[in-house]
Length: 501
Image (cartoon, rainbow, N blue to C red; front, side):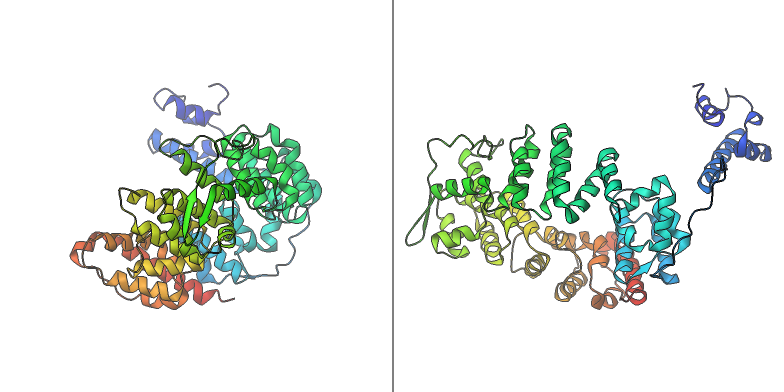
């Protein structure tokens, strides 16, 4: 307690047991003495506030050094005043999603932050920093280099090899991950050497995330490092390594999995698919994921998922000379249809196929709930949907919205369709929203999607979204959310009007 400064000690002890405020020094003491007519409690709080403001404003230099270089001239035009006002408004509401959308739009229009907002923006932590960098301008970059806590915003943007080495050796985990990913883009050999040199000493969760960074620019040269991950003692690290090795069709792992899968799946004319497992796997099988299944999953189902998820879907079209629809239909007639379909769903991440997606979604929707419980069908559809490119997701979502497709559920399909929505989908969503009269599951799914919809509607639909919208009495609890939505729509219209590339 003795090591605490007087104001902090006063707060800990309580005003009834603490010394008089007149003994305080610094700006907090001056504030406390100037407010002597107020209660002790108010004087303590206001003194603490005054000290906080003073510290944020700056401090007295211990010595005056030579003046540094001035900020270089800016090459980007500053954002319009209306956009600057929006930034201040959104920062006050702590709406990170809207703030990110504004910054992204500014970067697309090649505009920079106004100087007065730079200190507040540079103070942001976490993922928002990546969105700030493109709109800092030259003055913002100059300012960031002068402040130790802001300097990390620029980590990896124009880092020298020496600075990158220092960050990898001394930085926090997030700083090291960022510099690893950036170095991988310019010097993959060096990035691999870094990770190989420290891999065994990293924490397991860090090993998994570092390995995940190899996904960008993945090549056969990464195979030795991924093999370390495949043999790792942590299950999470092994999962990441196996997934990345499956993305390398000529890797030893991928070749082993294909050989095993071809020995397990047999196609018999005219259209029959049979599954025959060997009595015993080879010595590497367990490390390759052919291990004990998780609770609630059958052994054969687990093995099928592992085998099929490691191979591109086109493997089976070529091997059996059949279309995705024929293969899924044949799987449905076998005893292993669910396991086969789940393995194929996970294989979508190796190469999405609209024909496979449609066939699998239709297959799961037709299953008897006793064979495939609705919750699991939805989970499988969710997995498949995440692997689809945005345009494919939008097409399926439109079909779900129009009632032509049952999976995934409408709320999930809308949530998993990224911005910007195609005009056709956005108009169908707005029309469906205005047609709701009662609290049905469909209405709840549509209104649940409202909070993020202003940011994903295309510019062509913002005027229609801003038209007056009054809900019927059964849906009146959603009126406040709808009002917020239309306020956000107005913000988005301003952005589109003011920030044209």
